[in-house]
Amino acid sequence: MRIAVYCASSTKIHPDFFADAHAIGEGLAKRGICLVNGAGHMGLMGESSNACLAAGGEVIGVIPTFMVEQNWHHTHLTQLIETPDMHQRKQTIAQLSDGCIALPGGCGTLEELMEVITWKQLGLYLKPIVILNTRGYYDPLLMQLQRGIEEHFLGQRHADIWRVATTPDEAIELVLSTPQWDASVRKFAAI
Image (cartoon, rainbow, N blue to C red; front, side, top):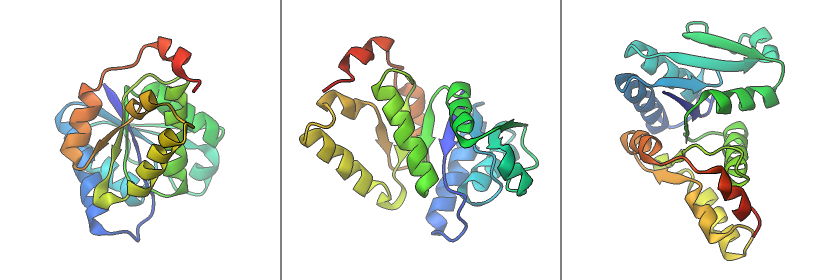
């Protein structure tokens, strides 16, 4: 089994974010689950990868060539996959994984999370999506998504696209226990 972990590369963040990233990496390794991420060596990406590897786990990193040229990649992963661009990176991560956990992050993480939510709404990605809401980081986004439901930009059934966890263990349990959707959800994509 492989789980994608979307997260930040920033290093100037609260230690709680690093602690949860570490726990996710270690927790996946202890369950024999391969971590798939964007192959960065810094921030929460590096922390989760290092924790997973230190616990005997495997990490597959997917990164565009231009980032490798900048030496932004982790050099000790189990497998490093280079892609021509960011779009192929996201598609490859989604295809390789059996579900995803979004840790806090910046624009890139938010964009990855929203894209995979959109794909699931359209029936293109049927796997579990879990948001780890460390320190209430995702509260504003979750409020916005709820507002989208209230204003009928999303259907009430779309609230089942994602699950929200407050601890790393809960996030892992949710990604493992949430059933995959059936492609028939495409008929519900429209509001």
